Image (cartoon, rainbow, N blue to C red):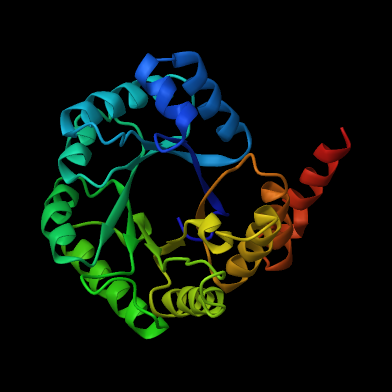
Length: 272
C-alpha cells in the first residue's frame, strides 16, 4: 500500500461528538449515512467508527454493529474500527462480511499486545494502526518511538500480518504544550520510513493544533510537512477546508503525483 497516495481516514463518526452520539442512540440512519458518504466524497478511503458512549461493552457492541451495517450499505470505503475494548474489536471481525477493515489500534503496552495479537493472528488480512507508546506512556524522543514501532512490526509479522497492512502512528502531540512536539513527530516519521520502508505511517492530525487558534491552518501546514517526511495516511476531518488541497499540493511537490495530474484535476474542480 505505500506509494498509492495519501490515505485519509475520516474521523467524524465518533460517539464523543454529541450529534453523533444522539444519532447512534436514536438509530438515525439518514444522519450516519450522509456523514459517511460526505466523508467518502471528500477523499476518505476509510471511515472511522467509534461507538464508545461509556454505557458498557454490550451496548458498545450493539451500537458499533449498527454503525457497521449502516455505513457498509452507504459507501465503498473501508471501515476503521475504533475501540479501546479488544472484545468489541473481536465482535466486529465477525460482522465484517468481507468488508475492508482497519483496527484502531494496538500499542506497545503489554496488555494491548496480549489481547490484540491473537485477533490479528486470526485476521492477518486486516489493516492495523500501531501506536508508538508502551506501559511507560508516550516516549519523549524519536529513538524510543521507533524502537516500539519495530517491536510491534516484528510481533505482527510473526502473527502473519503483511507489512503493507501495518500503519505506524508516531503519535502527534500538541505544540501548544511543548514546542518540540511537532519536530519530534516529523523526525520519528522520517526514521520509521527509513528503517521500515514497507510499512505505512499514519497519525491523528488534529492533535498538533489542540488549544490553539485557527487550528485548520496549523493542521494543513503540518499535514504537508508530514507528507514530505513520509506520512502515508492520516486520521482527519476530510470536510475541513483546505485538507484535500493540502494533500494534492504536497503530493505534487514531493513526487507522488506523476506529471502533477491529480493536482491539475483538483485545480479544475475548484473552477467548476
